[in-house]
Image 1 (cartoon, rainbow, N blue to C red):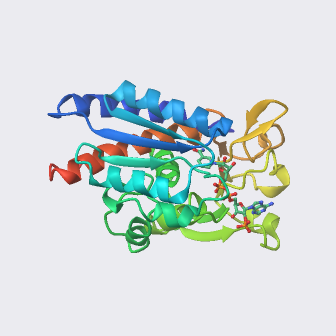
Image 2 (tube, rainbow, N blue to C red):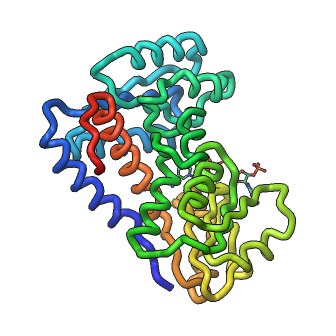
Length: 282
Ligand code: NDP
C-alpha cells in the first residue's frame, strides 16, 4: 500500500506561496474569526496563523466569546467585508449552537469567502465557473493531482454530504470527469458501493469506521476524517485493517489536514489578486 502524504504537497504549496507574496507590493491579509473555546478549533486556528506567518500573509485574529450574539458577529463580518486591507475572512466552524451558521456564512462577501462556503461560490463550483473553492475538497483534488491519480472516468464514492466537505467535493470531482456517488448515514449497502469504487473518499467523522471489508484490492482511499481515539488522532479508516488490502491511503495525521490550510492560503492570495485585478493564470 502506498501512503499519500498530504504534508509533503502542502509544504511545496506553502514554499511557492512564500515566493509569490514576496513579489507583492503589500502582504495579503486574512481575518480569522473564532467563536467560543472549542479545543480542536483553537488548535486549527493556531495552525492557520502559523502558516500565514510562514508565507508572508498577515493574519488578524478575532476571538469572540461563546455567548456572542448573532448581531455582534454579523456586525464584525460586515466591517471586515468593507475593509480594503482585508482580503479573506475565515469563520472557524463549528459555531456555538445558538448561532445560525448558514445565515452567518451568507453574510461573508463572496469575494472574501476564502473557505468557499458562500452560496455564490458553491454555485460557481456547481456550474464549473471561476470562484473560490472550498479548502478541504480543493486539498483532496490537489493531492490526487500531485500523485498522478487520474479522475476522468473513475468511479468515486464520497462518504459524507456536508456543506464543508462532501457536497463541494462531489462538485469538484464531477468537474474532473469522475462518476460520483455520494453516500451518507441513510445510504443502504454502503459496503457494496465502496467495494465497487476505484476511489473512496471518507468524511464522516467516525474513528476507524472503515475496515478492509469495505474495499477492494485496487481501491485508492482518501481519509478526510480527523477524530480523537484513545487520546490520539486518527481518521475514519482503520489503517491496520486495510494496509494489506488497498492500493493507496492518506494517513491521519499528515493527510488532508495540512492541504486544507495550504488551500486556504492559496485562496487568500487569489482573493487579493482578484480584488486588485492583478490576476494572472496562476
Ligand atoms: P459532518 O458531521 O458535517 O458530516 C458528516 C457526514 O458523514 C454527514 O453527511 C453524515 O450523514 C455522514 N455520516 C456520518 N456517519 C456515517 C456513516 N456511518 N455512514 C455513512 N455516512 C455517515 O462532518 P464534516 O463534513 O464537517 O467533517 C467530516 C470529517 O472530516 C470530520 O472528522 C472532520 O473533523 C473532518 N474534517 C477534516 C478536515 C481536514 O482538513 N482534513 C476539514 C474538515 C473536516 P448525514 O448527512 O446523513 O448525517
